[in-house]
Amino acid sequence: MFMGNYNILIVEDEPSIADNLKISLSREGFNTELCNTLRDARKALSSKQFNLIILDVGLPDGSGFDFCREIRQESNIPIIMLTARSDEIDRVVGLEIGADDYVT
Figure 1 (spheres, one colour):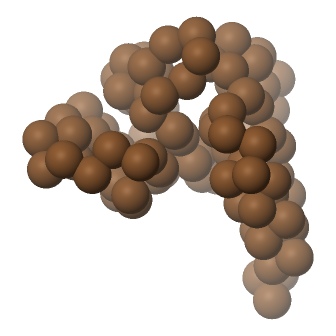
Figure 2 (figure 1 turned 180 degrees about the horizontal axis):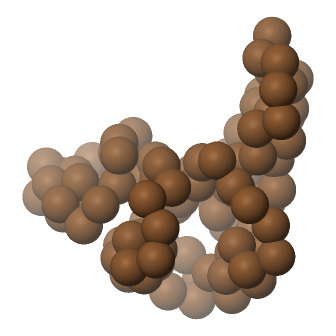
Figure 3 (figure 1 turned 30 degrees about the vertical axis):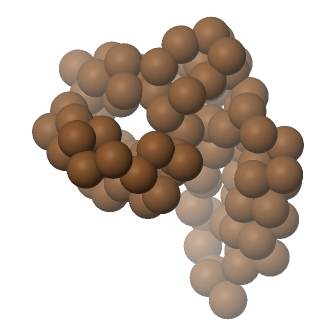
């Protein structure tokens, strides 16, 4: 089990994926905050320090790719893109815009 104060922001709109991530990471000792929209994620980032962002590409109010670019203008916080999009071009785009990893 992880010991420490490690905050993870999960930005995911699919309830089953979001809940499983939150439960699994919490069991390992991580503090997690779940946002279903980019709007909520922006609020969370402005009010709390996070050590990692797990970011879905397709969200109801915008693109995770665009949000990743936005974050990179201000921060080097690690970002893992999490998506059902498995096309090689999406993976390349995700990594080129600043994601640290891209998981399908």
